[in-house]
Amino acid sequence: MLLQKYLRKDEWFSNIKGDTLAGLVVALALIPEAIAFSIIAGVDPKVGLYASFCIAVVISFVGGRPGMISAATGAMALLMVTLVKEYGLEYLLAATVLTGILQMIAGYFKLGRLMSFVPRAVVVGFVNALAILIFMAQLPELTNVTWHVYALTAAGLGIIYLFPYIPKIGTLLPSPLVTIVAITVVVVLFGIDIRTVGDMGELPDTLPMFLIPQIPFNFETLMIILPYSVSLAIVGLLESLMTATIIDDLTDTKSDKNQECSGQGMANIASGFMGGMAGCAMIGQSVINVKSGGRARLSTFLAGVFLLIMVVFLSDLISIIPMAALVAVMIMVSIGTFDWGSVKRLKTLPLSTNIVMLSTVIVVVWTHNLALGVFVGVLLASLFFANKISHFMYSQTSYDEQTDTKEYKIVGQVFFNSADRFVEFFDFKEVVENVTIDLTRANFWDISAVYALDKVVIKLRREGANVNIIGQNSATSTIIDRFGVHDKPEDIEKVMGGH
Figure 1 (cartoon, helix red, strand yellow):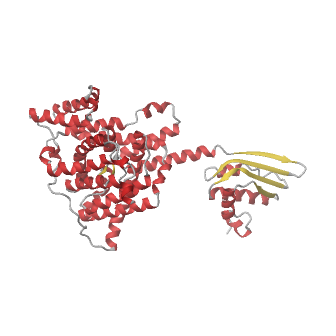
Figure 2 (figure 1 turned 90 degrees about the horizontal axis):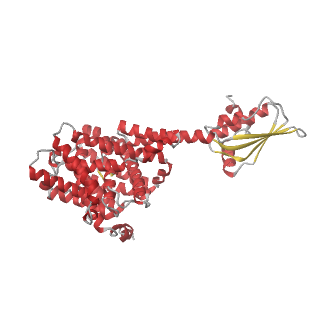
Figure 3 (figure 1 turned 180 degrees about the horizontal axis):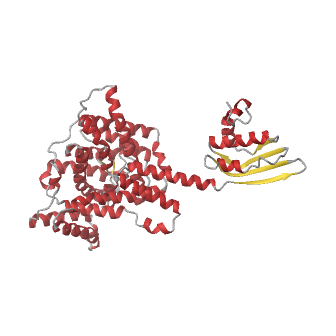
């Protein structure tokens, strides 16, 4: 039954040709990035390459988003630097395994549904920031180089965008793959001396092996790796779930976010035991995969398999690929990832939405911290939403002279941001015998709202009025009954500032 769940034919073999070619393109693009991320983390290049292979292969079976690429990433590598520097590789491998365990726990508790709390403006900001970071990551390869690099990069971009228009063969092969092959052939034939994949670092010549991290298995070790694992787990899930949402939009399909959480956990556990670093979904490589025709799980699986075959058995061939060709591919990814429509929409969208999007972009690009950028975006969006909702609350008042009763009909949402406004609706100086507070069209959401009601009732009673509250719905009644104190004399003085 479990095997059938992960080997559904429509998710594996519905697009064999497209997935095979896309997997090959992704594998080629993964090599320099995995090496670069290993260098960032301060470990041997094989750690990033083994991680990319393990994570891609495992996630192809157990992930929640077919066609999405997961591997070693820069966002995760940045979080490992201090751990590797102070404690070494073995502690990193242990932290990677613990990261996977924490992510599986997140999947078990279905934390993937938290993505529903991320506004569209934050997702757009996240995408645009990643596009900018992907482009910025290519700048070192375009700085202090000969004119050949610029010419080859421009030629590569020309092939990428023009090859699809060639009759018949233009649709048979993915243009990024054609670009890599063509630029490599030109460089080799003309003996052009430029930077290649081989200059990035030494490629491994052996297959990864199962190993248990050589660390003391005690509480002290756990306390060392736990903070890093928590950070890695959060950033990894955040980037993976955001990427899944983006690929959902690109392919017009849905993904299982909770399964993706568990799948990322399983992949990282496998990576840690195979000598690899922690990783997560990669928006750049995922977009390459989709743009190259990859749709099913087969593309992700083959990307990992091709990666291992190339770095272990075809290292001499792979090492001669010019970085200019891969830079052209990544620039294409950057251009394709950026939501250009969001720039045009700046004139028509509300100011608050634009602030949320731009703030997300600025924080991510400035700090290179994806989690912080999304946190800032969600926080700002929440504050703007709370402020907007609070303005939809109002009061309707009426007075009955025969019974000397003043009625306040409250309409809207009462919560922390509108609680003070709720209190301001009431006239505490006007002396009446009876006051009715009608909550039929109101909703109380939190303790601040209940506290405001308590304050109003107690003040009106101090002025000699009989207060009657009517029309509470079940949710409002529950929170008022549980936390309200206006009918509990022993607690009234505490609320009003007494001791």
